[in-house]
Length: 548
Ligand code: COA
Image (cartoon, rainbow, N blue to C red):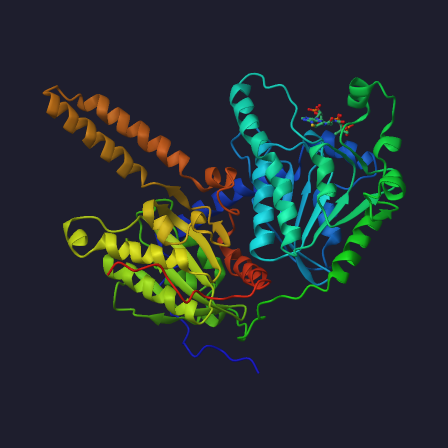
């Protein structure tokens, strides 16, 4: 019989009728409305005309294809739906990817949106694609791709296309990496399954070329290294789509197609059959504890974090609304209190939680390093709840060994081998981002609340530091210091830094896995905790030398 953790539920001090809560909640809802509009835009792909054209050809949009392959009433955890936000490219990158359950098996599912540039490979699509491969590999999940792609993005860069051309060129150099990585997946024993839904040229054609299993569709799948016009130019040969690369030809002559479906739904049915015969078993255990709803309402998470991140947040208020039964066994609560550490569970999956309750002091870093080692000893995944302005600076902190102890913590995070999940609820600044297992620290998943801000430091600090540098330089050179001009620069820098640190900017650049509604945090984490268990969970028993 499953047990519960013995820790009692956390109590809550949140004043849900207070002015601050009401203001925060209203700001959060406003930010969520903006995100919802952008999600709708991503959903709309290349726009209503392109969608209508797709339907008039009897084809389903990519999200519908994915919805049909999933088990009924099962969730789809979409990753980076707003990639490409605030760029020259369509929001969503013309690509949909996420984790979903097919025939009882958690799979990484990805696919082109052919209404966006015919599914051509843009840099944002490339970033998402690489991330999809990484998720499949790190979490040992079958990789299922829905291909319909015009290959490389061949548009002529115009207008501000100078930057587009540079991005395209840089990106092209990496394109081959997708195929390298797909072959790596197969080598690692992670199955790759591909349905070709339509025309797939060149880069699009290599995807079935690199997959373990291919499903083609009669009179729909057209797969060739070069389409009829290019063949005519290259060799003078006359051809048509169907004879050059049709599904029937590939099923009967080239052997590239393993299955030939009658239509899209038939292809999806075959895909489900293929996944079911994989007989995929998770290496990690299922939930070992009882799943209990938190005793505090997730709705309250809307009013917890202010737009002004200088307002303190008690991270326990988040844990209380995410953890099973709000249970939390806090470790060393009286030592290094700005780092909250303790054991909890989500949907029955045990988890060690580290959350920020202020700047990281030397003893807080030391406590985190200790806690991370304990969780590794017992193979418990870690949840990092980031709201961090960084490690403590100043004479006392330096004398107390903030560099040594901060490095111990970063060492522990780096060498930890249990899965790390990171949720950024507020600030994620400086080395605090590293110590709290930011994306560069090979965490398995990173999600942002709309209130998240990611930067080397806060806008005021960046602007202020550079103002002091200018002032000191003027004094050194014996020059007058123009206070008014400096104030203007400070104002400008703050504005630019603030705008550049916003969650939407980060997620547009695919530097995380997406922005979530705070109320969904528990569900999203549970899906991730289930996904990471496709791979065995083995904590580190050895670490780099801790400088003591
Ligand atoms: N790069 C960038 N944009 C592309 C593109 C590519 N490789 N292929 C197509 N597009 C764009 C089109 O310009 C069009 O854009 P618009 O909506 O702004 O006008 C849009 O995608 C749809 O293309 P269209 O040809 O109207 O749609 P279709 O469904 O009838 O045909 C293809 C789609 C992909 C079959 C067809 O466009 C095609 O053959 N493209 C060239 C593929 C190729 O040779 N690739 C070689 C890559 S190395």
